Length: 107
Length: 412
Image (tube, rainbow over all chains, first blue to last red; front, top):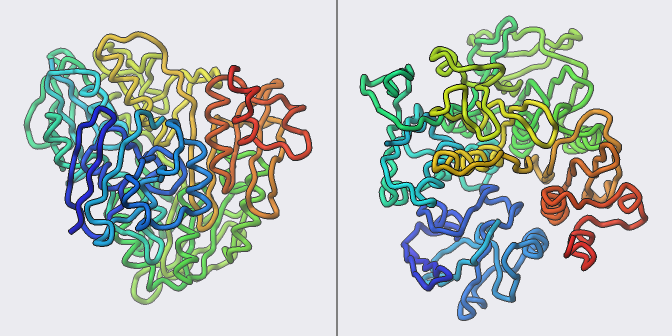
């Protein structure tokens, strides 16, 4: 089972082990990670599960879909080339150990 | 003094979360009549029913979160009475919980069909996880699905049933689908889109009765126009009624919901009500309103927590909604009303557009289809009261997303 680490803006780290295929949003919401809201339930419609994926994992991420790209333009915290929606990234063995930074603001 | 929250839905959990986030240190008890970990309802009529999608329920907050925050969930237990004099809630297991503040987040219940045959096996509603689990199991075998009511739930379910390959008939007694929530132009676009998806959408046609087959299960739905539709699975989505009987029995004021003031307090200031069950003074329409949405539940939950912690101020958050019906993603910001002047922005033929609803010359609501960036822009513009004028919106090539991002709007 893969692990995910969420880093808060103050540097606090929260690591968790999840079932294969769990999205970054679902894992965070289920565990109550501060700063990841997921208010639309994972439909790429609200941009409240915005995360910054550490660059060393960039090559292993799925492509950004059109819907996700459009929503990333609407995030409250600044969009960077590391920005993704957590609901669109399923974590399996290939992304084991992924580290993401939680933005200061979601809504 | 503890806070007791009656209701384990989106609103109730948000109250608890926001109390802890705000530094509230006393006990928090949530009384949730459904067993198990409180979960999100919206996916139950969407991803949960679509073939090949994730069917695991999405918890509202995980058990680790609840434990870490010192939030006690009494699951599978109902609140059966409020004793306001002694500030106690009586539970179905005989326990009593004392409170300093009580929050009623009791939600709503599905309205039931009242016609002949409405109790036949094979006729279901869709609200709870067990409802969705039953439909998840039955949909792959269903051949003829009849949906009663072309509201959000009915059409979400209809789209899911089409994705399973069933023949789907939707009966709606009103002339348009989602007529209470949408402008006529958007509602009519959705009617056509569902027909293109292969849904047999029967408008101006209600349900008269159901007929049973030899096995005793539902076999057909007969409409008010006398048409007979074969049916092996029927889902009714004909609206809800607020769960306000607990409040009414305790002498709190109710009127299509639990009546609250602008700070979400009931007629007893130590008792608040939030979410689907609350009838609140709506700053956006100037009328008393009850809204059934995630936004209303979570924003009112946050506000009620603030009221308990001594913050003053009126609940003013902008209402917004969403629905996913097959490939159609609908998002609504604000509340439209009959008589609004509408402007189409975008390309309805390509299935990506927003309808801007103007009232008294000002932007009042925006309905976006497959245009989430427009929706986010609309929420920000409406909340700030800085929407485009009718003339700006009517200009050729107008884009709400671009308008919201334009430098001119930055300092508005």
